[in-house]
Image (cartoon, rainbow, N blue to C red; front, side, top):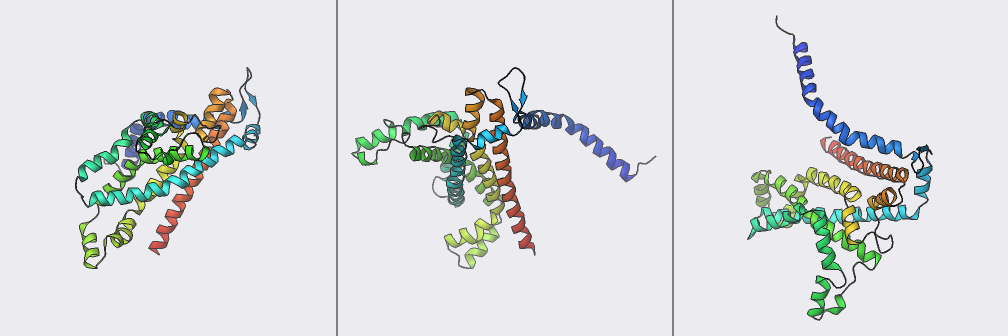
Length: 299
């Protein structure tokens, strides 16, 4: 007896669901359960034998803490200060590599190498390079350029700039690989048509390449936004320990201090929830703007 299309579809749907079930269970345990636990913990006080429900008191403590506002400010500085530069440099370098300049294969390897080096190694190396008696300053002294010597980790502004530079140095390779992969997938006819129309290198870059890479650029911006809010703790902890003072604290450092130094799990959880919401809002706004622009293009 032949099965109807509806029954066949239902059977295939059930089979697919059963095959995906182990992966769904793992994802739920690894990702969703911790989020649920963080949300629950943010409403409790844990420094007693039995957790005490305190409602929104943890959030009131956080919003009244100057260290929290310093942390969130530094995260936004990293986002605003580094993402435009990373996107621009990724585009420029990817086009140079696509044009196959001399030794382009070697440059492609070198550009991606920092991305695969562990953050801990990168942070330690640059700590020795940028410290007051580090490699950079000692080199400047040797060549009699003492007026360029800077104690990068002594002052709040320069310490944050140093951290931002190291993050950009490491993350740039990923952006270059994304952009060049997309450029290589484009049809040669597009570039040939631009040449026939008399477009120079810059015009070709602005009016042909950038529009074709728009979706990749937006994806890269989303990834960088998430990185700047949730993946910079190692840089800060190793290079500055959050100092001088608390001037280079970021959200992860704030969570770490309250979770493991002050043993205030409720405040740490509430802070994590706040940064999760902030990140989601920024990503949703970016996706909304992208969809709106796509809709206007199709009108």
